[in-house]
Image 1: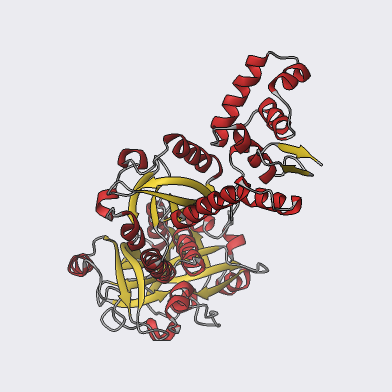
Image 2: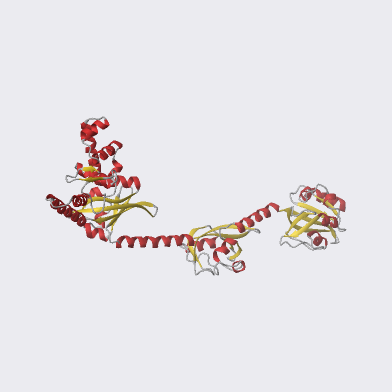
Length: 498
């Protein structure tokens, strides 16, 4: 069989292959290329590909994957012509005049000889690996751009082959201090909570689940992280493990600060000299009490735990308790509420009660402080009694002194906070003002165009809301809260306009 027939048959065999095949004559002319080879160079004819090796070099620039430009005589086609065997050499192929590579080719060679063992035909077999290397490039770009710290370890020798900027910034290592070192030198699984499992999975090439670990890094003695491992395959079918990390330092610092803050709060709560209780805002259930509360009221924290004030009978007056709780639910805070509380042994305590809503560990709680004013109230009562006794025979007092004594009798040392006013309707507030100004029930009935019984009903309602039980006390309340100006009380306690 002559040479031309052999070449024709060879061409028929390879024309339908998916791999590209280029045949080169001993004189370096390109004699034939199958459709796959032409497509891999973006042409349809051999003339466009290049009539010979020199023309091919003119039309295409080749660069090895290590970014080293192919110099004259070192291109795969030149090396084959020179008789060198080429096996899976990977090059980037760029059309002349282009800025970036158009294809990535993997090339191997074959030399066909005649009966005398002389080169008769040189064959270049080309595989288009562009997609694979583009995918690798995308992985490389995303790996290095990803802010999440990561390293890649080769499973065959457990050495790190890649590291991204996130890992270097988190640990303080330099690139060359990581790449090439083993997992035993930079132990990314140190003090891991399930280290035995992680090491077993690493040697098996299996997935390592998320777990906490402590890295030794140049910047600090230790760095707490969450680490996880995912097996991946790198180019060349190299089995590797991708380790990713989440820095726990910020979270651990926040947890430590929160723990210290809670400890300080607990100490302040327990050591506060004022009786204090706390509980959940939802349902107003008491959960704890400090030592001062136990000393004054006799209840222990265990006796109070998970009970409401009404269940314990802590309030003497249920109406006052309901007013206090309504205001706390509405405003989230109460200041200086005056009420009477009952200790565990049954004795009653006059108190000023303040409460505020606070957030603890994401939950809404209530802190309530209680000031014992029993002695002060007793002193005020004794003072009033003494003044009333002195005023019983006041024929030798001047009018000015009588007015001052009357004011002392009616005004407590510390004025109670305005609270009942919030409960009054507009009509009840008007009637309170008229009462303080000295109007009678008949006067108000005529002024407002209502019956005398309706006036009395309004009076009963406002007495209940203000926590008073007689007309003179309502007058004092109105004066203390600035509802009238320029008035004084006579000996009977009735307000007189001046």
